Length: 167
Image (cartoon, rainbow, N blue to C red; front, side, top):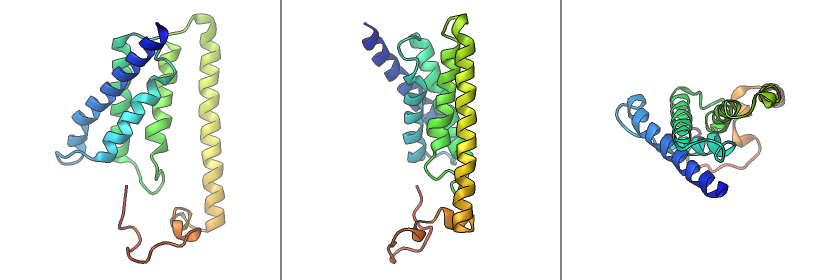
């Protein structure tokens, strides 16, 4: 059935993203695995396959997972943790783009224009809303450091110096 096939393809994509991360991450971190990379890549594989799990084959599902996991791992290795503190871009944004491109290759030609328009529209809205939110945060807090500081809005523990813990 379609739901069983989607489930199987989701597992294959998760497997592909995990294997890709276990393969790439040691090259980016002096031979060691970073737990955040594994966590992020598994999510990236699930995000990338979610829209096409019932229309692709097993090999495509595995490839989508590998590509999403690789992209997520590489982006995490070179990302600025002060800008994307939760990894929204490399865990959700980029894998969703990979899934959107994959879906464009699997639909009929009559729907291709609509799919491309939707993908471009989504990217435009995401970039514009991110830029507006970033400027708004910067204007409210006066600096980039304060915009990403919990101390502005919360009573933070005094036992650890700021910046000691990182994800």
